[in-house]
Image (cartoon, rainbow, N blue to C red):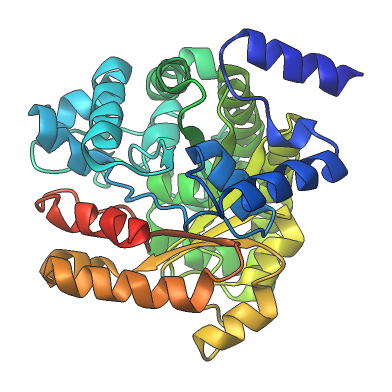
Length: 383
């Protein structure tokens, strides 16, 4: 009954109901109905995504070019404006949807949003998105891990602006496009305050001190995730970059960050939202992340550590999660539109035959290059 009330409340507010509020059998019925209708007519973005996430074939493979910061070129908005103003960022995201198309939007602004709330000094360059000032880290020594305390989202300038961005985008998108929120995983947030190389060493030498800091950070990230769900996003992506060969060993990641990532995922699931993972590392740990977060979607840039070929990935994980990716960003930077379309069509043939695949870059579309190859991606999905 509570879920039915939640569905009615979302519809009354002019936003799509959370997919997790539907009983699985009803969600499968909706997905099957959309799949059948897609054989004869064009589906809406939300119908297409619902069918795809439930591993039903749609009228076409969904696509998201992830032209987040790159879309600021359309309106001439500066990087500092995009990074610090919810309204300006929303204008960029909306311009990207209108100009490029696509079936969903993932509100990833940059990776220093959460760290700012814990006191990390942030730089706002004119030629790129915001980043930490690593000359002034919050965690200067291992003893500083124990000084990190939870913070309130409402008191954190950038996190509160991000929640406002979610509210604006949900209101503007309505039933037309799925809006996904974004949370940098606790280990990633801590790396913004310590530096990745030093943090990796500390995870090996001082794991309990690191985990004490992660506990405090996770408390705030759970509140941050809840605020995004309250804003009405349909999904939340957790970026667990260091669950890969670029970060920690699989066993160490499952010990250090896995339990805290699970707590964030629980918040998403409690609210009936779609749980997504973004990880653009090499040799990512699909199996460990699935155990920890039980996601519906995984956005990836490279094959998992236990898959040698794309067919291995399809066989091992294709029915367990919806795959999101994995057009190489170097190709987007240097390839011709025809080369990008050819790669997109190849990936659709490999991954997208029976649902369970969303075409996207392996990571955010490069911020300072023309948008022509983003258009090529969307065109390829519609061919």
